[in-house]
Figure (cartoon, rainbow, N blue to C red):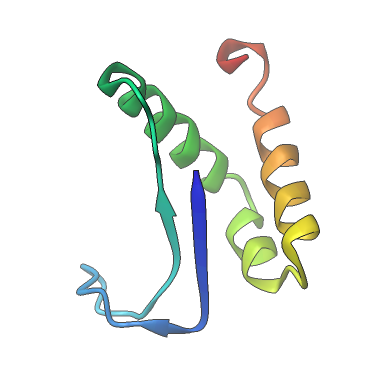
Length: 79
């Protein structure tokens, strides 16, 4: 997974008309893995304050920490 972040936001033709700040690219070898990973990512980002924490993170270590904490909170169903 690759995460791109823009503090200013980019016009990405979002449905809400607002600038887009986070961009995720999944580089998966097998197509069958795509939907489970998208599901997992959506559920991680739906957790309170995860998006704000990603936008405010000062470096890659902090970004990684936010994502791993969010993944851990999903529980064993996604393990």
